[in-house]
Length: 173
Image (tube, one colour):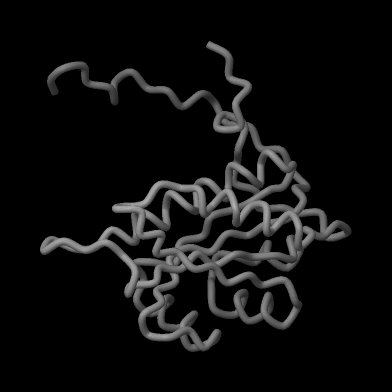
């Protein structure tokens, strides 16, 4: 099997080259990829808040305890769920899954563009979600789900292969 797919090359990056900045065109490209993710009943409940100016970036760094590398990266995308648009059943809604798929597409497209990313969780931490809502004047129907730091990588972390046969169950458990 060839492992040349971006799926096998993508890594979480925590060190960025602050001399290079992600362009608006690159961000739009990644968001387009994110919006091509599958969703329950094609509801597409995602919304995206992009932060590239230093004031917005500083605000995020003040709120989120695990995103200090954002200072060097210079760009962030907050993936949000519009709860008014999510597909719901009596058992619950699907927005978190839809937004997770969109986030993964964004990460993979960034890697294809030669950019580094780090997915920092927001949901289900209610206090963190509330802090993002308040700091960025998000309406109550918008739930911030994930923060994706985006920039030019200043590291190339390697990880061993992850395939683990013990986690695969054929035809029965």
